[in-house]
Structure formats: structure tokens, C-alpha cells
Image 1 (cartoon, rainbow, N blue to C red):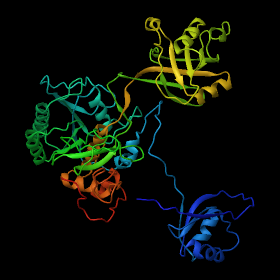
Image 2 (image 1 turned 180 degrees about the vertical axis):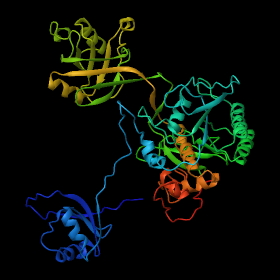
Image 3 (image 1 turned 180 degrees about the horizontal axis):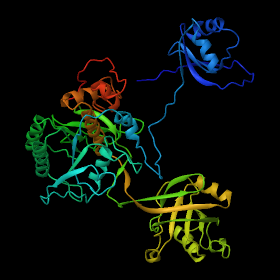
Image 4 (image 1 turned 30 degrees about the vertical axis):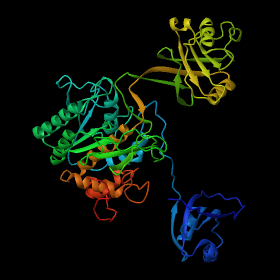
Length: 537
């Protein structure tokens, strides 16, 4: 849908100083702005109302202006004004990682999951992640981990030896604990079935065994169950098709990744199991709600959810995190390949290009050497810093390039013991160099979180949303959950259901208000009738 240009023109109506605090408002008038509405409003109020930085619109009858509280009150009383509201902030669904606390991933914001989590939950929903397993010792997941199964060893130990399943699990249910990240539905009962090996591969036989285990567990303990399957291929199986029909008969909701086989201008069909009739197929969008280039497409797509650079849990200690902080800010950076692990706080010294002659005698001993890229290799710069007894090295770029850096640029480098060596942008490094002195904290250490892209990351957003919705309305049928999400989804492509986004980008809070308004204080439905909006389920 094309967005019309709405600003007609700008009127600067005052040059006088004013003391009262102002705020920007949208003022809706009874007459069009450019057809006498603005003049009629001016004529209806006294000269005490001073309209500042006025922007007139044609998309609605009204304008934007800076007003004091008194002026707002005066305008509200005018017969020419329909309503007045403050201008509110809008922003891209992006995020910066909080290195000293909990990060709210952009997908959680896009789904309005935090608002939804404030609703009154009437029961606990079971979510089974069929994947590479789970790190059930992860601090974000261990409190809600309920058990699992390993189809390879036929034991109840689904420990993740790959990482994919742990990442998926974190998006669904990472704890709200002021640590790391938070999932869509932190209060579920989490189960794991390992049917993919350490290389991320499995077979249809294992998938059937995994689904059979879930069905047996549901028969054993009862309750409401959602299954996430961030896996698949372009091959279908009649045996799987029968099993998924059985699973649906048990009122178990299955959510699956649509697949990552598309390329720019060449969409690929939805993969299996997402393409089966009884499975929800989830496409991937980025933080601007644009379709990811790799996302498979087809009439089977039900919803779209965040799937590009999704931050979530990984097995404990399997990733690394590097950052630099000073007195005013903390910034995630990258470490050079070969950098030592650890954290150090010390004064820094700028030593130009880091040639041996650039290091003042005794000037960097026990300190951090700040070096500019250029003239020689990163290994040679770091060797010169080591010879001067520097405790760590920060190298800042001399252009805007983003390619990886390494200390292993020659044969001798493979045998050397390197200090902490971090990379900084040209802008950040130049600012430190201009400052000349100060104290930095540099860190390159193990991390329990990481970013991954794929429809594998989209599916757990919807699985978590289904589980959260079901906790508000335990007696709801799966098709009612689907309908609530479909009818409140943000339409992104062609009007209605389409092959790229399905019903659109889900909003679990809006769906919760629709399905179970009593779970929210002051909750109300949108007034649209219940019903399905396309899809195959």
C-alpha cells in the first residue's frame, strides 16, 4: 500500500519568545485545513493562543502544532475543533543489546508480547520443542524445563549438542529475570525432544517418534500442548502426513518453519512439515516487517514473524561477547580471531599506527594500547604492543569496512599467545584518540546468547504466542486461537491472506484482548466478528 504525502505546507506563525512549556499536538478541525479550516479556528479563539511550527495535513482534517497546556484547553473549547491529542513516538523495531541487564529482543516488541504477558493467566501450557535438544542447565530455561526425550539414545536426556534447539527455546520461553533476553511466553512448561543430531540433521522416522512421544506425554499428564518444529525439507512423507492428522485430532497445535530456500526474485515453495494441512507455516520478516529474502512462499503460509538476526539463548558458554566501555557508554564490538578471553579495566594510551617507534618508553606498561589500522598487519601491531608490555590492545578502523579481522596473518602467529585484542569503529576510535587519556574496560569472554536468522527463528515466536493465548483462555479450541491471531494480524502484503505473509504479522496482545478480554483490565475486543482470514487450517 502506498503512503500518501500528508504534509501540505509549514507555517511559521511566531517569532516571539515564550516561557510556558510546550508540547507537540495533533489538532483535528471540523473543516479541511487548506479550505478555510485553519483560518476559522484562528477566528474562533482569542489572541492568547499562539500556534507554533504548524504543519497542515490533507490526510485528515487538521494540523500539528506546539502548544502550552492552557492553549490546548482553549482550543478544545472551540467549536471548530473535533479533538486534540499529543504527537506520539514511532520507531523502527530495532534494538541494542543491554550488556548490563536484560535485552528485549525486537521480536518481543513486534508481537507486543510484553503487554500481553500482563494479562491474567488461568493455566500453564505445555510447549514441546522438537529440534536438536536443549541446554536444560541454561539459567534462562532450567526453571521451566519439565523433561524430554532423545530419539537417538531412546533416553530422557535431550541435551543440545548443536545449539539450534536452545536458541528456539529461548525465543519461546526465556525467563523474565533481568538477565540476557526474555521470551514470548516465559511461564510455559517447556519440554524438549531431540530428533536432530549434532550436525542439525534427522529423519522422518525420528520425527514420527518425536510426535508419538508428545502424544503419549499428553495422554499421560493431560493439559494443552503446542509443538514447535523449526526444521524440515522439500520432501514430504505420507507417514508424517498421517501422524500430523492424528496430532491435530488430539488438539495439539503444531507450528513449523516455512523454510529458507528462497533467493532474491526466486521464491521457493513452503517446506515440509510446514506445508502439511494440519501444521501452521511461519514466514520470516525483519525488524522493519519486510519479508526476509530467504523465506519460502506459498498459499500454506499462515503468519509472518521476526526471523532476521534474532537474539536468543545458546548452550552455556558456546558463544563469545566482546565489548568496550568507558565512563559514559558501553558498546558491543568484535574481537580479533586469536584474541585472549577475559576482562580488563585500565588506562589507555593512543599510539598512532602502532609501529615499534610509536610506543613511548614505559608509557603503555600495564595499560591498553589504542592503535589505528594501517601500515602493517594486526599481528605486527599487537607484537609491538606486547613488546611494550601493554596489557590489551584496541585497534580502530580507518574506513567503514566490516570484514573480519584476524591475528593469524603469518605462520608464527599460530604459536603466539595474544592478549585481549578488540576492534573498534573508525568513529569511536577517533573520538578516543582525540580525547587522549582515560580509562577503558575491555572484555572478550564466553556468552550464553547469540543472533541467528531463519524461519527457524520465526516459528517459535508464533508457538510462544499460541501458548500465551491459550493460558488466557484454557477452554479455547485451537481454531479459536488461530482465528484470534489471524483477525488481529497486521496485514503486510496483498490485502487479506497472501503467499508471502499469510494473514500477516501477529500481535499477541491484540489477539489476547480479542480472545479473552476478561484477562486484561479494561480489555475490549475490536468489534470484528470471529472468523478465519485465509490459511489452510
